[in-house]
Length: 215
Image 1 (tube, rainbow, N blue to C red):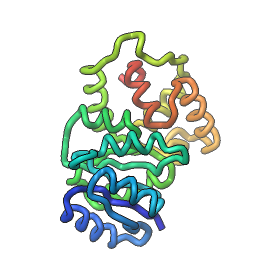
Image 2 (cartoon, helix red, strand yellow):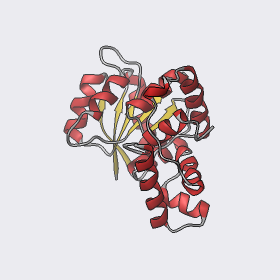
Image 3 (cartoon, rainbow, N blue to C red):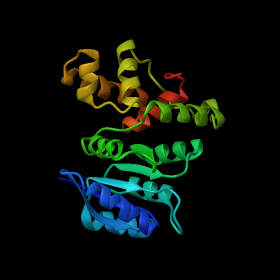
């Protein structure tokens, strides 16, 4: 059973998400929170597999929660941002702060549950439309050249793997798409992270966007 926590300042939204997830056989809502501080407390108490996080909340918002989780010494559960705000800059800020996926609240139950399962399995969910948004936001907020990470050259195969990572594919799905062994894909991902100087798959996509690798 995949245990999730729903963080949203609107009671009706939390109840709606809980009611929808109650229809599934493998996902349960372990707890709820209505702001950033209560979110951290709920995560500490329930140790969820995935956190569903709104960005705009009173007092401490979702970006604050993501940054606080990133500082945890014992690691943090994967976070799926679930928000009504269709904003390129917010997408970029959330991904930079450590979100593993980003969906709008008008998403279908099928897409929501798929995203939860992907994150619970260690994957990321950055759909092509989100990648386009990240590209636009990166170009608008391009840092000075000195601020860009030092990136070693990726092989053609590593770029192929990276593009599929950016689209939210798991290692198993990448292996199937490229007709490779799953162990080979894991090796490509590890090498890709090392070359990009990235701490995780989401950070790898952001660094690749900065370096125009995915243009």
